[in-house]
Length: 337
Ligand SMILES: Cc1cc2nc3c(=O)[nH]c(=O)nc-3n(C[C@H](O)[C@H](O)[C@H](O)COP(=O)(O)OP(=O)(O)OC[C@H]3O[C@@H](n4cnc5c(N)ncnc54)[C@H](O)[C@@H]3O)c2cc1C
Image 1 (tube, rainbow, N blue to C red):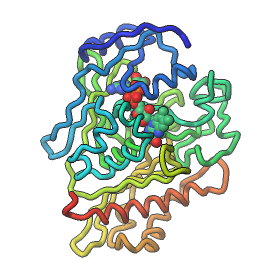
Image 2: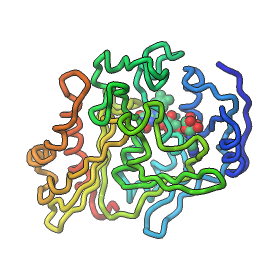
Image 3: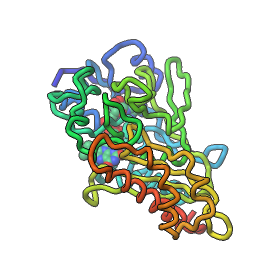
Image 4: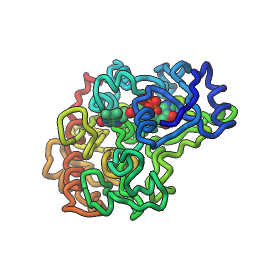
């Protein structure tokens, strides 16, 4: 591991100044991702700034009845915050189903958004395998291997078939949340959660998110909504595992219990949370418990789902997760919110 210097930041201004002034600076929040990168050779900074002391811990109500959550909040604390549990069950569940209790106690929301793909070729120690994200121009070993479980269904290119692993990002995209970032001179920028991560179709594969090198994530804002929500995670073992696919759903129910509108984002299928545009007209008027009708209705949204190789089992899994998330969201009772 390359040697680096370390300081603890006392205020946001000094962090922004350091990011703007010198190259080779990395920010340390909970450290659960960054330390792996240092060991695996994914990052080799000259200088580490520990941002744990910055005042980015508040959880406060916004004017529209939503919540503003500081970027340094721990995943475990947000997952059990009473307002989050009651009003945004998809967010609470996405955090609770992620990683392990020890990791959730250390890991922050900002770090969760900035985590990198779990594609095994990207993560290979010392970058020994072809990966365009890791070594530009070296190729995509994942595409050549044709392993469908870790590959994207949407938004991939011949250059990169990786998916983004954050569970929380999927819930935030479904909830129409905003990532608040701060840049040079303290200028604030607000990015819709579903536009924060980048697919290789949108940007060079080495870029993971829209966050610039001189910016800091300061908060996540979830708008006030009365729609019930749910998060479903499908994985190869029941805990401590990344999603094969996941689905976060919000539903608007008519008085007779049928669906009036829905919003769904998928995880594990692209290098960003994949929002299922156009779902409302397909499911409007259906009963959430009529899963056969829902399966048929959402089918067209998966016709474009194109795995690089394999049998296409993930597209079927994603469709099933979508239906289950819609049904689970509708089952969240009025009194629970
Ligand atoms: C074994 C294991 C299993 C996991 N399983 C899951 C899972 O199932 N689901 C899931 O969603 N995640 C999972 N994770 C990922 C975990 O959630 C992340 O490691 C964690 O959220 C990162 O947060 P951190 O505070 O530790 O980030 P750090 O490691 O401190 O930082 C990670 C990156 O984020 C940047 N960063 C941190 N905060 C900010 C900020 N405020 N502004 C700008 N940049 C910032 C850092 O500079 C660094 O580049 C897993 C991790 C491990 C190690």
